[in-house]
Amino acid sequence: MEGFVDLHSYNRRAWDKAVERKSRWTVPVSSDTVAAARRGSWEIVLTPTKPVPRKWFPDFRSAEILCLASGGGQQGPVLAAAGESAGARVTVFDVSPRQLAQDRLVAERDGLGLETVEGDMRDLGAFSDGKFDLIVHPCSNLFVPDVRPVWRECARVLKRGGVLLAGFVNPVLYLFDQRKIDEGILEIRHELPYSDLASITKSERDAYVRAGEAMEFGHTLTDQIGGQLDAGFVVTGFYEDRWEGQPPAEYTDTYIGSRALNFHHLQ
Image 1 (tube, rainbow, N blue to C red):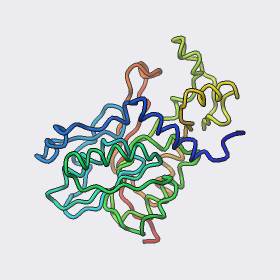
Image 2: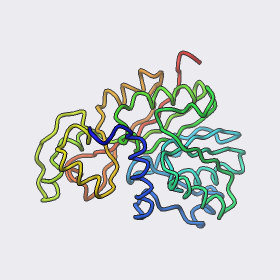
Image 3: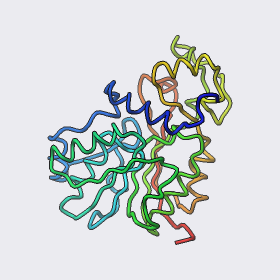
Image 4: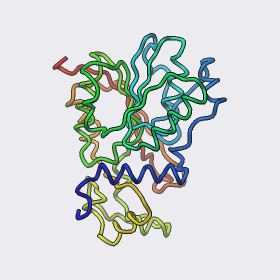
């Protein structure tokens, strides 16, 4: 783990570099997409391909919406446009200044009301208890070593009965040797939970650093789903998804989307 005393800062730089590379998750939506959302024609994803069911969203009238670890000019602007006429207010929270700049770019380009806040998803101290009606949290908690603080903070800043929409990785994705996958071979190598800081060799990790790749962590379903339940959520929706071309997607779904209601006992 040498060299990663400040994982937060390292992953922030990695995602800033991802914007420079125009990674899929850093490319802002178009003005046409924003215009369609204003007309009521819109969708967003929590996982690579499947749109979130529209029935999962609460009423947008005067809603406070948090897009958590969701920078890149994608979910936030769409929700801001979709909820504009209903008086919804959207805040995008992300570790990467460059990702947040993508949201501001869309907001300024298309005249959207949207706030951006930089920070660590495990610490939402910038927000008061019970501030939000909806949290949208696409696949991003794979970039923190412990996901349970994320769920606890979500429960704190959501109103009682508020909705958490979350996407996350099925840890089965991390069982396999990535070097073998690059050769087209699925070979079990790792135990779960997985960590880029502990589960691979220093030379492999150094290669990720040279490439500017963010460090990843494969959380157990006990921490992903059980962690939501322990934080005070009741899961009311669930689906699975896969990213074609990403092994082992030809055999099983490797991503999960969930909907949960907040009944955190401290509120």
